[in-house]
Image (tube, rainbow, N blue to C red; front, side):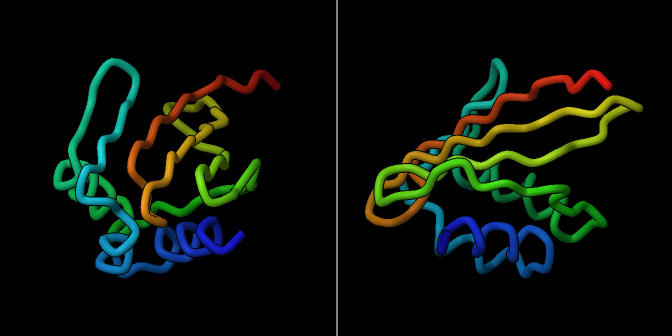
Length: 106
């Protein structure tokens, strides 16, 4: 739970500079049909952290020395989604990250 708690704390409380230590130099983020490198992803995350965005209902699915999987809730345009994030770890850092959004039907 160490890495999960770290990510939730940084995303909810900042500062984003703390996240830089968790991102591997070979980091890539796969999102829907696109891909971002470390600089692009950190720039996007910086906007969230410095804004009023917060993790809603973060839930740890799995964490070990190879992978960190968690989900959280996102409200977008009046709809509720469960976002699942899968982090593959290398050298104790996030190396590859992929997310998937699932619509939650009430």
